[in-house]
Image (cartoon, rainbow, N blue to C red; front, top):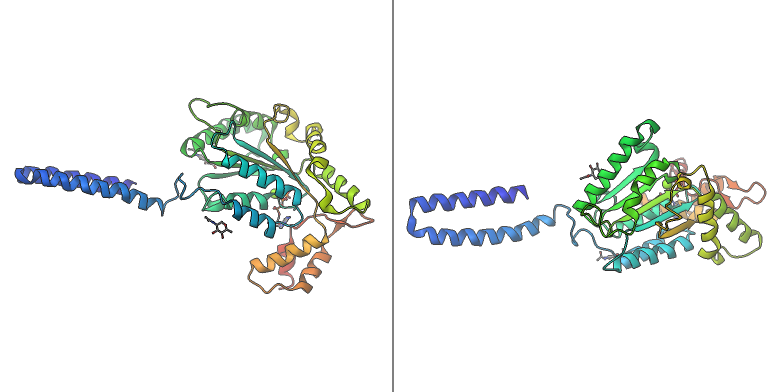
Length: 335
Ligand SMILES: Nc1ncnc2c1ncn2[C@@H]1O[C@H](COP(=O)(O)OP(=O)(O)OP(=O)(O)O)[C@@H](O)[C@H]1O
Ligand SMILES: *[C@@H]1O[C@H](CO)[C@@H](O)[C@H](O)[C@H]1NC(C)=O
Ligand SMILES: *[C@@H]1O[C@H](CO)[C@@H](O)[C@H](O)[C@H]1NC(C)=O
Ligand SMILES: [Mg+2]
């Protein structure tokens, strides 16, 4: 952009100089300048191909891409897959959303919450997680000190406002939401609400994703009940989990949610439950990890890695304690 401005100034100057030296050809020079400016206007479009900007060339939703990714890469999360597909597609296809999209992802550790956020990002932003329009905040990393809460609040509000001003289709991912101070959650509430605009900025194209372990134990209990009753995991439906989940989060004083009105004001559009992972999923994670490292998938090693993980409850050993986390480092040991 700056480069083209410099060029434009140079051209205008040459017009002035030519006009001073040779009055007759001024008309021609001005014509040339106009043609060149026209070229530069297009040239700026060329620049857009190299520098990320808030345009369709860089930000466009690939519905089938997300569908395929969720089906092929995400294991054992049929409920979450369905909710996310519906939520994201519905929101992006809506030309005039009444509020930003707010998703709250809940579940046991290592079940794919960060992983899914990444899949969503990759199918909206060409540059994926490295996009300038995707912002990830980790409570314990970005907002660690309770004593600085007022600074954090002001900063965070300014960041959200500044970034949405630059690009309405911005995404904000808040990790470890259950460790985030209630006051901080409160401070972002206005941006999630049904406002036309706040101080001239509209937030209705933005996407907010909250990640937490809140409700994870409750989800696990429900899935375990299905398992004990001999019912298929795939029989678990959103309605089996949703109400229990939001109540659980709401009643959990440990989690920051408790103090806020995110839930009772219905600012969260979708609660997305992540189910605890079983041996078969861990095995698939190990195979996927080998593929990602461009190794020939080895079933024997995958099964060895999956067997080495710890499972709970003690008697039945159904669910992986760490989900698919640490698969990578376990694999290092065998390769
Ligand atoms: N359901 C899954 N399907 C495929 N891979 C998965 C799944 N869950 C986890 N993984 C793999 O394990 C890694 C760790 O998972 P991830 O970071 O998404 O867990 P998380 O749910 O965010 O856990 P935590 O609550 O501890 O933050 C991912 O990068 C991914 O490779
Ligand atoms: C959408 O994603 C699919 C699968 O990943 C890919 O083949 C396709 O090229 C993508 N489409 C666009 C427009 O990027
Ligand atoms: C956008 O957000 C980032 C944090 O992700 C912050 O550092 C930056 O200052 C923000 N930009 C504006 C214009 O506020
Ligand atoms: Mg995580």
